[in-house]
Amino acid sequence: MFTKTLLVYFIVYILSDFSYGQRDKKFFRTDYDYIETTKGFYKIHTSEQTWAGAKRVCALEGASLFYAENRAEANAVISWWKTVQPNVGWAFVGISDIITEGIFETIDGKLVSEVYNQWQRGEPNDLHGDEDCVHLKLSGDLNDYRCDGESYFICKKSLASLEWNDLCNMPQLGYTFSEDTGKCYKLHTTPLNWTEADTVCRTEQSHLAVINEKLEADYLANFTKSASRRRIKGDYLKGIFHAGFQKKLYEDWQTVRGTPISSDASLWWDNHLPTEDQHKQCGSMFYTGSLNIVNCATKSLFICEREVDTETLGEEEYYE
Ligand SMILES: [Ca+2]
Ligand SMILES: [Ca+2]
Image 1 (cartoon, rainbow, N blue to C red):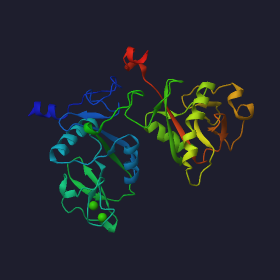
Image 2 (image 1 turned 60 degrees about the vertical axis):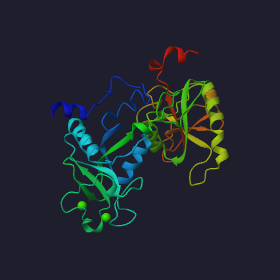
Image 3 (image 1 turned 180 degrees about the horizontal axis):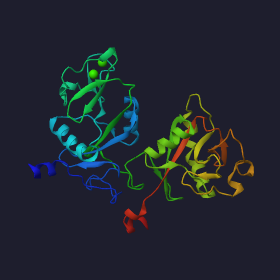
Image 4 (image 1 turned 180 degrees about the vertical axis):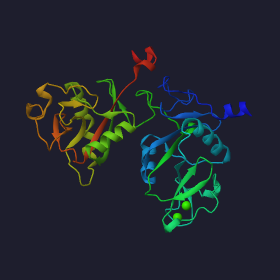
């Protein structure tokens, strides 16, 4: 029995050994654990979200809100859960009856009867006519709960669905490698405010683009041309992209990596460095590549940047 339990949660990669990632290496992200018996990667989020928020965070991580396909997977995940987060009693999973009251479906449209569906006694009860989203409890039971209630949640990525962006050495295929800068970038075309954009980049394991040299500004100016052609509609400030620098209270302007911003005036709009302006404390870039400052509440498109972890790439591959 003991060996069986050991086999059930076969957590392959731990934090110290990261970034080799392909299907055969069974690596997705450092913050996900792999369970061999279910061929899936899992993460329990311990910052609370609404059900819709949970679904969104999982998607941003390149995964999806977990539900158990069958009892074997439910058992394996619960065994793992007991070892990694024994104090978390329940978590949102990817099942709801949002579309039709009383018809519970998974986020990818399977009826709950086709997947693991052990309800707690008396559930689902649609309490106060207001429970459409499903919790999995550490006991293994399901319960319907309010979708706007905030809860911990579990994300899953199946091994079979794992793809790898080799040049960027990450699972997100949306990132483009730049030979000019040796870094990877993604242009996000859903307008957000600066803080939301910063969160999205971090969730993708990157950061808002830090532009500290002309070469990079020129590359990104070219890179953003694709966004103007799309003519993205909506209520947002057109013509800029949020970038990775800001002015925090009582601190100087700095990049999201905590380094000083470039003092090269030619990088900045109108050739002057950002000044003191309490209404404009967040960084941005024009289509031309020149840098500017905006109000942090401004919604705009944005660019995430990821440094390629060269240590984990083979030397031959990298130094071509
Ligand atoms: Ca309901
Ligand atoms: Ca309930």
